[in-house]
Image (cartoon, rainbow, N blue to C red):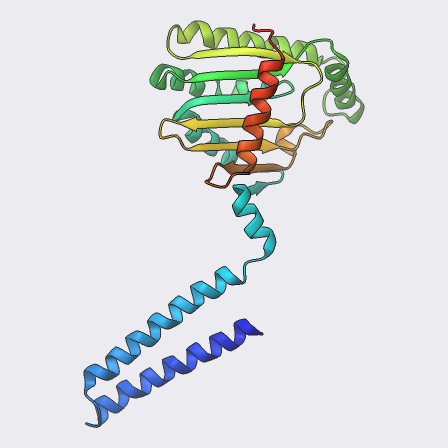
Length: 252
């Protein structure tokens, strides 16, 4: 109701300004420049009030998302759109922190872009993956087979071997350009994280709500950025990552 009243009031101001302009043109009661000034002023007021109303009428959820640094929510996101977003981030990355159960799709897709970033930016990368043959990783593999996500001839531990080989290859090809470190978790995993800091100190990330047997690309994900707010999702995830990284001192 308040929104409507403000719009009506703004419309009245505009009409009054237009009438003043017409009267100035048809008669000599007021100078023409006064009518034009009134019209311009009215339009400016309308624009200002419209912007103000939009900000004031934003749902509480949107305001909370803004303060937390959530810029977008993906659900069953388009691979091409998501891929382009990550390609741009990785290409400009100074630091990358990755926290996956396995991460096979990510490394298969972005290995060459990561290598380019390491050669160009000397990017420092930290990776946390699941530890082979642990109850957690075995359970995830069993759920994927039971749900039909993969057939029973595939093995999640074998997938982890492939990812680790990709990481070793990246390390060899990059040489002294940047660095890539790998550690493994047993029970500390909570959600998939891609945390990227650019050379300009812009901090962005993709936080996926991991819900096995669904793969990460099929799950809900939040595109986040760091802001001046004390409690952003990016800051929370970075703190969690650093804590887990220190806890699992099993460099590979």
